[in-house]
Image 1 (cartoon, helix red, strand yellow):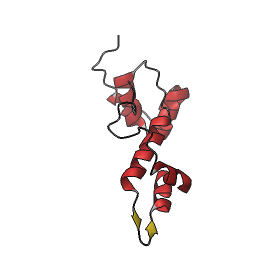
Image 2 (cartoon, one colour):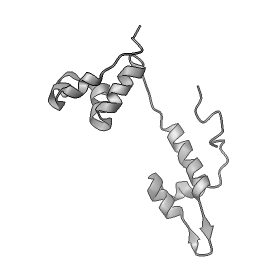
Image 3 (tube, rainbow, N blue to C red):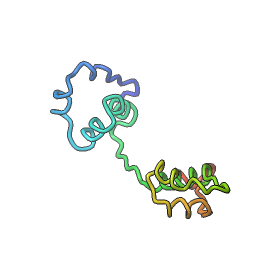
Length: 113
């Protein structure tokens, strides 16, 4: 069993090249895209756990965001700005603003355990 008080702060004393030389696959991706702090936190808190991050909750949260921030005025609406902010199509915004798919922030199915 992993020591829950494992401290990996000593990692910060190593050069980038030294770290990269010994990382592979997922650990290397996390280090390159998220940085040393995130890699250390994952090793300290979630060592030996396989993780998969699905896009479904992210898409559901985008829908929640649209419903929360969509505004329509006499001059038009903010659908283009929402699409740019969320990295989705304007059509996605139009559909998400009215759909009732259960993706509310308080919906227990949004992040199932």
